[in-house]
Length: 99
Image 1 (cartoon, one colour):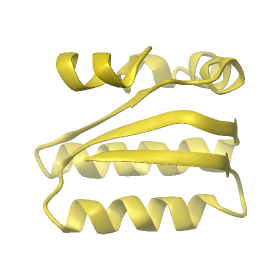
Image 2 (cartoon, rainbow, N blue to C red; image 1 turned 180 degrees about the horizontal axis):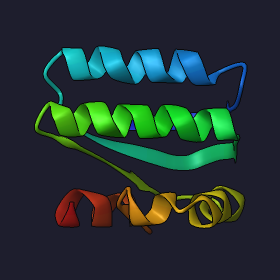
Image 3 (cartoon, rainbow, N blue to C red; image 1 turned 90 degrees about the horizontal axis):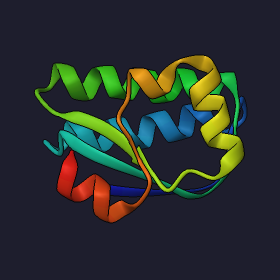
Image 4 (tube, rainbow, N blue to C red; image 1 turned 180 degrees about the vertical axis):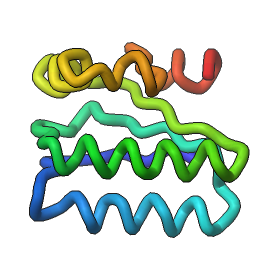
């Protein structure tokens, strides 16, 4: 499953993002690639939601990875330590072939 994320994942939108990804997990899609090419901003609430869905994917026997991060989002992932917990790929192609 490839999920393209657009705009912002912040306090206002993080719950909707989390619920939508959880719906996908409940449909037995346990491996999810988040294509973040069009994600402009990721807050701490957004990070929490990403972590929650990554853990739920893992508990379901799958995994979550991210790709195509813009520089600001990549910096947030790196500073928070998320890059060491969730696989991050430079391109969608890399994510699909190396996950």
